[in-house]
Image (cartoon, rainbow, N blue to C red):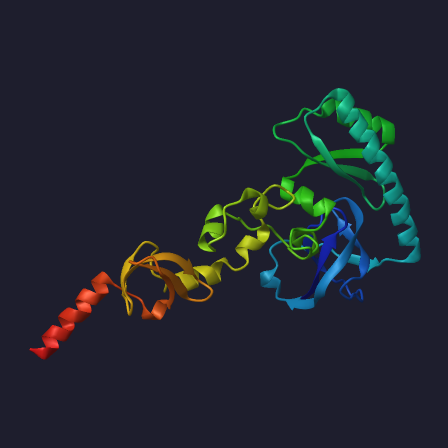
Amino acid sequence: MYEIINIRMRLSGEVVPYDVNNVNLRPGSWCVVEIEKGLDLGVAVGAVKMVLESEIKQPLLKVMRVMTPEDDAQFQENTRKEEAVYHSCNRMIREKNLSMRLVGAEYFFDQSKIIFYFTAEERVDFRELVKELAQLFQSRIEMRQIGVRDAARMLDGFGICGRELCCSSFLKEFTPVTIKMAKDQRLALNPEKLSGICGRLLCCLAYEECQYRELAKGAPREGMKIETPYGAGKIKGINLLKGAAIVALEGGREITMPFTEIKNEKQKMQSEKCKACKEK
């Protein structure tokens, strides 16, 4: 059995499972953790949990210690340097007229490496930029291209709901979001209302998709002709959450009927046929 805890990495926002390594951690605790060829800071999210060795997909990196005052001082120094290297790199990108947007800069905790995160529409040749950055800062340099959703996670902000962005607050990974989800939920197909600050479809469209699909199983088809206690009608709209349909009657009047009370013409004919058979 392994004791593991999820650690949200400081800048990228990626949530990674770590071996607790007998370190006393609570949700929200900042800690020093192992990364590839170095150390970095992260924050514990969720509680410690026990996991079978067979469930571990890859060798776990270890939590080294809870962040100390000395670590915090190092972090503050790195943060100041990150702002400076970000502006320097951004200036060099403009001077070289490179088609890329710099999103953030991250020092390894031990300052052995700097990672620059950027977005770009197409492939960018940044070899000369990397050489100049390495000479300027006397450190290993990595240029890491990320997607627009990852960029939104790093920059953080608030959504149209008024809450902190899901991607930067609790989402561990992105799931595919399609326009069909908006259609299933009977939402107006307005790009401004359906898109997040990243310009992609809102992540929250996927949250209740399964429930809407389940509700849709018992729903009649829009445009279907039906019989009502008030005469013939045609289904004009559907409200999945209420389990009801808006029915337009022949005289122009509209009524609301529960799905369970709706019978189309085919069902009516079958019902009448069965009734006739019973009478015989």
